[in-house]
Length: 216
Picture 1: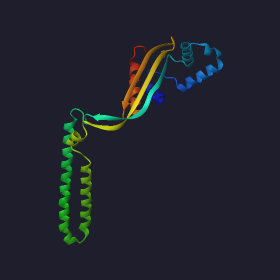
Picture 2: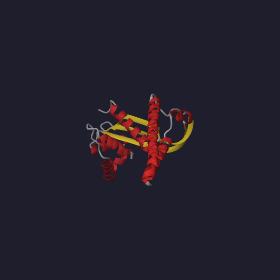
Picture 3: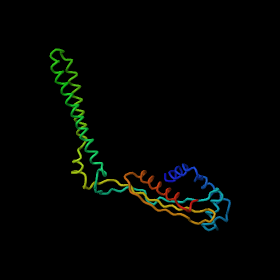
Picture 4: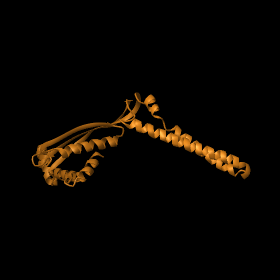
């Protein structure tokens, strides 16, 4: 998964040309099969040889050091970010006012249909039932949306058991012409989702790589 992520992101950079990993592995297998002297080479000589055969200027190596989830007690300090409390409070009050106005309008319709029912037999009962169902749906919807005070009193400052994703990554870049390591990276991250955490970590790694003065 991580290899595919990196390859796709590097392919989106027009100034870079990537060599497919499968092609590199194929070259390595062929080299090991035909060149008995390969096993006598040092690691640096071996990497230089592979890079030359696949036509690469650099070789990027890496490994996933952590990719798991753990259950942790997390203290919820804030539910809303700076400035969001006022916005939420206003939106909540506007929502409640709209629901209550609609319910009042439906109540008026129900009363009107009840009076008209004396003249229209049972036809008004159908309309009354539909309006009452609509009122109940609005009440159910209103009960699922909480005021700002609910979050401040019942959630902020409390501890909650939640699943946390832990991801870690190391990488190094080797210049083929010299066989020297010219860039290294080590990072870790916690997130609520494994894939999202790894994506963020890979983005940070590639940003560091492309900013490096060694890669020109």
